[in-house]
Length: 267
Image 1 (cartoon, helix red, strand yellow):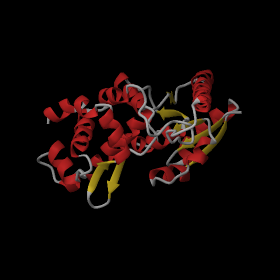
Image 2 (cartoon, rainbow, N blue to C red):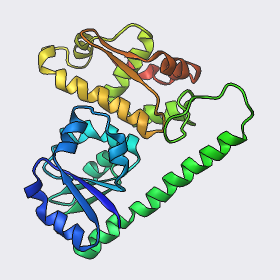
Image 3 (cartoon, helix red, strand yellow):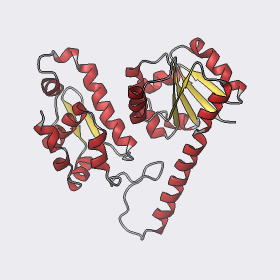
């Protein structure tokens, strides 16, 4: 039986979806409290990994969806978005960039629901195969100074292949500008006031704090999506944001400043 975590702001609002899944022999845990823990950045990765599939209810806004996706990407679960209607191409593209693998709509028949969710089996197989291969590769390496590894065996002090180029392509213009500026600043924090002046010259910084936080979270999330699971950006409370030293060193070695130079020119 496949375990499904249904994240919602109102369990009663998703009763019909929960019952439809249970009729298809899915074991469904519908929770508001797990959602709150993710929103408050609680470390519940072991809990999330118990489930093969995570469905995000339509009771969550697009902003709320964006905030919790980095946590789910790290957990390596099959993430599904439930919405009242089929998403257009622009929304599908956005969801895919965030890490959403499939979407359900209220009009889906039981057969269609099963077909969409069964796609998780291939995803889970690929994740397991990748972890196993990395473990075997690691055992074949000679003794010495090995890169540190995280829970899944991914190396956290090397960048994935083509990481910098893929990251530049995936970033929005605003994300690229902030990232390029942090690269240029090295170990000097980039303040929220500077970010506001850079992106919205005529706006009050107090009115843009939420958007700034979302952009920084998106940057972290996209680094995770591309396979780097080490620390990337450090928030210095009351000061601003700065790239973690080890991450900056890896980026510098990979020529990231040159790749992101165009983002600074366009500012």
